[in-house]
Image (cartoon, rainbow, N blue to C red; front, side):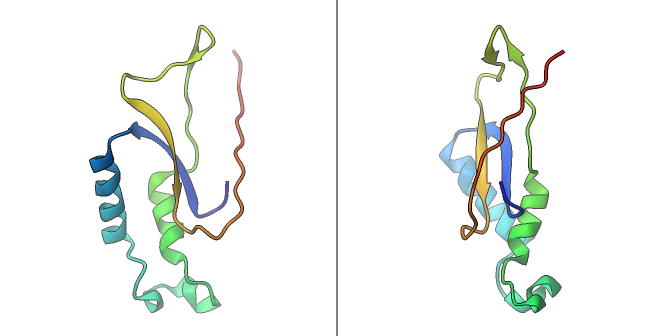
Length: 96
């Protein structure tokens, strides 16, 4: 994963995904680019850093009887806020 991506758990419902996109853009709009000091460095992705900070970078899920122990509607999602980065996934299993 990279510094402008997120992993989170929620309901897989299209309207909710649209609501998240709208809400995050209201909290940390991409434009105008010059509203962010980070973008003075030549980057244009300060909003992506802020959106990632809001949504988080990791999740923890219990494993019960060898299966991920999700609630009825829960799924793991990957949030991409600056699509120009290389991606990798890291899964760690921590035992008792």
